[in-house]
Length: 235
Image (cartoon, rainbow, N blue to C red; front, top):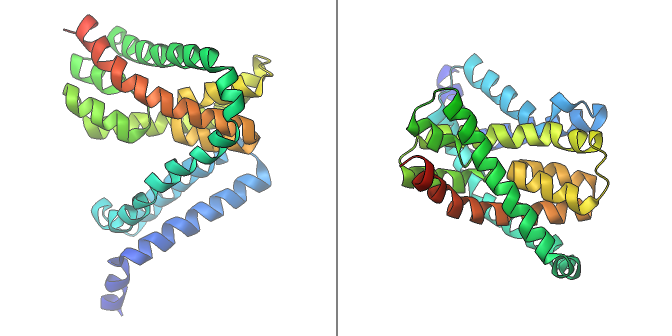
């Protein structure tokens, strides 16, 4: 029996199924309660970590299934082009406002994160690692690896930033009485990349489309601006 159980736990499909069941359950719970801390991504991560610890499953074994799920990340990102295409007229009409606001958002994200890290006395390597936190994880990883930071920690910073943006982004903007659906989408996408974009899509098609646009532009700008920031202030 134990041997059969070990075979199941080493199966890639088992971890795929486990992840999907946990995420669907988290989505159901969030949909029923709308409680901010029940954010599906946050709740799924916490549940999976608890399960892996409880059953003594290593991260490497779990990632046998995680890699299969990650394969679909790229097509999912490409799918964001659909709502963008449907809002192409709006995007063209507001292209200067969009570009300027996302550029400012990218700069603020880099400077505040790296500046706070420097003020707290972190070393150059950690400052570099946290600087691209607002970009989606693959871009943050590539930037940090190129600049000599800690890539795994950069991925963690990026995920935490996305989760926080997904939890508090919309309520914070409502508190500031931001009414523009375009501004809400751009702010969330620029500050909290893919996870925030998923949250923005819950608000509506316009918020989701502009969050996806900000996610893409912010990723490009972060890849360009972070090395410049490092050269100017950390050389």
